[in-house]
Image 1: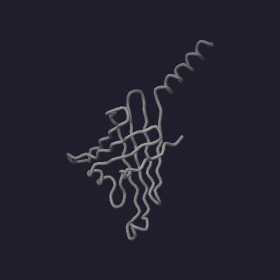
Image 2: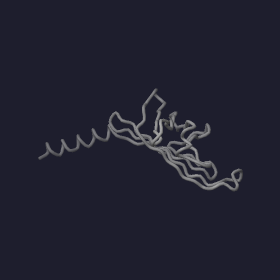
Image 3: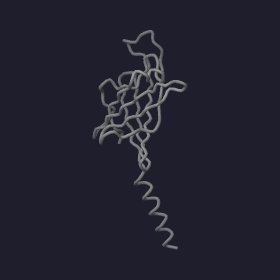
Image 4: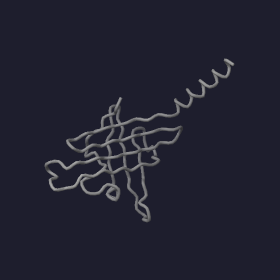
Length: 133
């Protein structure tokens, strides 16, 4: 019986070692950026979402929320790239995530405007999203 408990504990521990999720957050006034990077075995998944309320410089604009998610490729030790194809078109939104020890910066291609319109955008404008501990 003890052998089965040991086997069950070993399976749980090995699964936990192969899976993990990191969250990153940036609140810039009334703009909120959230990034989730999940690793499951050798697969990486990136989800980024934004929730923007107009600030003083954006008076007269509408609030918006947007998100994009999918499998990402690791192109270097600290860079991930997510490409999300636009349904029915040959174009794709490209999200580049630059990771550091304390956070992440996000860069987006122009085609990401399909997923985030108006004042919403995934690009962190050079600011770092802080890693949530």
